[in-house]
Image (tube, rainbow, N blue to C red; front, side, top):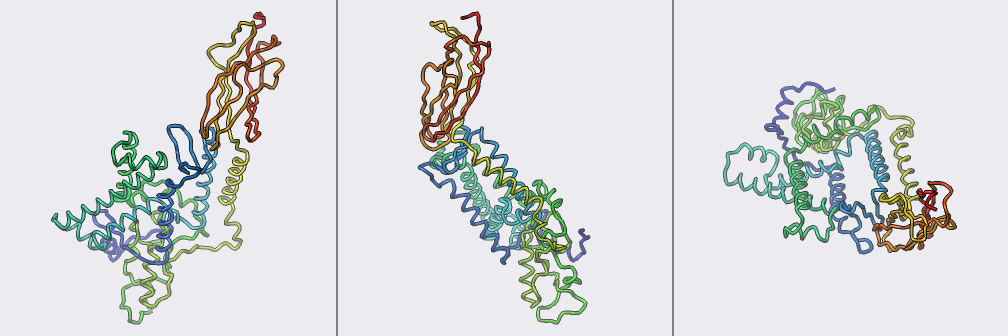
Length: 457
């Protein structure tokens, strides 16, 4: 539980916050290196993936207009949306699983909000100087230096935001067209509008809202604590070792009344959400490890053991396997269902429905005809040839075309006419169509109703 702040702690908070704004002090260290490496990998992948080509086409492309997703040669249509549900469920269970084991590390190391927030903070430190210099600049009167630095900073923020929006849109618009069309103002108004919208969102979230997104807007911050238990590894302050806290000189011998905490306040200064980890578990903490890196540097200077602030669990479960039940088992089940779906997925899809314009009609030979609408979707990246036949070929035949060539990742719509060779015994007869993929020898069967009237024969 959090404890009220002392006067000394209140001063520490005031040094890192001004009018509600948190000034993040830059920090190097073990956990910071992990975050930066992860950030480089994730951001590089985010930028470069749209440029990857596969079989002469963009490897990953969400084509909203044509309602299809191309993913390294696999084309998914609205009929395949079930796999998206499984993927989202799997992602949720994996997130809960990691939270159950290591707390809110997703927020601290891989969340886009955290990555862009710290990226914007890095730009601010390069332009305005240290976090204290930023505070002084904000307090200073408007002048040439302040205007210049603020203009450069916000210009760089806007440039990063625009690039982020363009990269994001390149997953929905072919990258070969997007950049040139946007910068030459030849893109459609819809594309231009979405680019500027996402650029504005990035600029506001990364530069202005910052930690408020993690504290007040993101729903994960509110319910993630229900997944914690006594075995969850969380960033914690060792009260037994650290108290009583107090300042001292580096080379002076420590008083027996003092703990290892020198009350320097650096753990607060480096915190992206501006909390004091020494006040116990707080929902605002994103488990980023910056406070641990700052504290370890101080401990090293005083020649004290490191780990005053570290990842730790209240209790260690003796049977380690039991920590993987629940969310871990649910994640494995989702993996299993995804594998089954991939294994059973067809390379094409077929839909056959009756033409609603007429129940039936009589041709010039006095035979009953029904018209059906045949849709064939080719989910592969090669031209495929399909043929259609009726199982009861003695009583029903197809007039006209019964073989079709469908382009890669395309859909063809055809009208087929079915003729009854003799009078059906029933007014409504169920007939079965077989659509055959001639290259892969795959068959999909669909049934529909054939209508007639006995008095027409």
